[in-house]
Length: 124
Image (cartoon, rainbow, N blue to C red):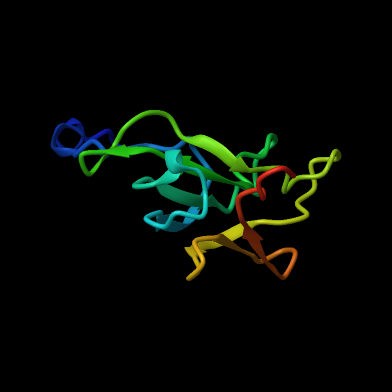
């Protein structure tokens, strides 16, 4: 306060926006071949999540598709359910990476765990 319309006029809109209060702490572009082809060239984002809200937001890993080097389309949920039925955090993604085999790694600072996500084996 007071409002600054001059500063609002100078604001640069983001190239891509996630929802509010998700606290994206990790990002990894996917160029490997272990996961489905639809993930190639896009970005996995770890949403650490909000903690001081009536309704929690985040607590998941999403995928943002890219085309021509730019985000294209809505974020897609990939790994969810880091909140239990009572709305308590049983995990909070902090970082994401891709290992040498092309699997997605998710560091979780509540569960003190690194999750490894791979594609299902054919026929399983």
